[in-house]
Image (cartoon, rainbow, N blue to C red):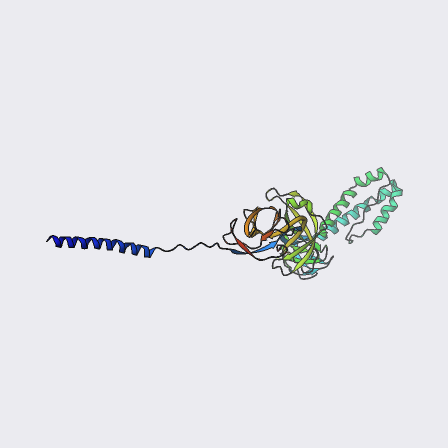
Length: 379
């Protein structure tokens, strides 16, 4: 019985020992060796910095308007009678052609009546002039002989030779009647509107037969030979722009270019935007009013600078360069920001500047240069 217990005890001890060694073997078999870490080298593209004179081009845009534009309004009342051509948008008129005529028969009759009354008044004073002012009689007789009530313009009254004659003529109401006629004749001319220059009717608000009232808008007439583009430019560039300077212009699709000239620069700065108005004169047969154009104004040349894409900037004042096969952040001085690029200063000639963004870039990152060019690409 004792031998049996001893054997069972020995077998138990052996099983425990075997279990320990088996467990250790299993644990050791699951341990993986840690591979040696290898440093990743990123491939980058660089440009070799070469500082030079970089022109600062200020972009601006706006809509074209005709330099000479006339809105047609009626100052009199009547029926739209006729025009020398069809009164329709797009119709061309030459200088002096009749744009619009308003019926003036009734008003013209009142002018003739006033002229007849003046003629009668002068005739009534002729006997007194013969008796009291014989020297003045002849010139007033000559005036009556040439007076025609049907003339469009009433001739000026003879100049008095003395104060007595002047007082006599004035006292009989001759001067007041004359100036009343001149006022009526001036208003009569407003029934006819003529083209002040060669141009095109861009808007027509009335048709023949329409009753026109004072203050009513009749249309719009523009000169198609000269246009103007108004753009807003930053105040810091105002001193660099000059009147007479040529400006390159492009349409919205950048498919056609035009040339303009700075004609005026406003002296007032807009309080909100801190910009000034610059007016560009354009003379081109392909230009139309209302066209949207983009202007590129040459402001100044920045010496010892380069132009790079804005996406290469880090924190608006740093760029990545390559030194000893590693990336390094270099402080720079941004001079001018445009929509897609920036002009910077502060990099030495020969510096290898990263020309394309590197994913996950950080200072000290190992890199391998793939390509170089002499200078960074500019717009």
